[in-house]
Image (tube, rainbow, N blue to C red; front, side, top):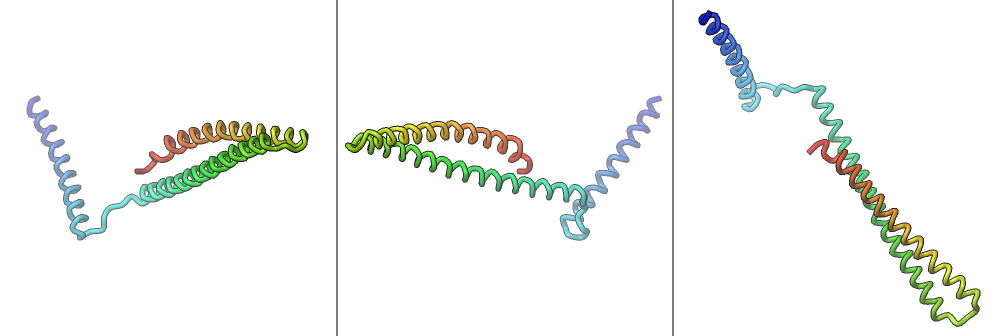
Length: 140
């Protein structure tokens, strides 16, 4: 019985060493340039597809960040416009109708800027979460 175990163990060891030797020899020959490297064509195509997908997502993320930056600048302009209307209303000595219009415009611009900031903050957090966590870790 002990002989049978030794025989089985030696057979397993011989198979392992033969596979390891073949693998090492192939790897050595590939590195030395004596043979063409072994490639899995389907796997290489899938890797290339994932890399291209990652590049597309990075481009989309870049464009989304750029839109976010433009929108932030637009909100700054809205706030500035609201302040200008407030200043005009304070220094205006003309008709009450004009002063009412300036007050309404000022309030409207300020509300637009406030709502825009809320939207911008939500969209920025969604952008970061969606793209960063789900797509940018695909391929390093």
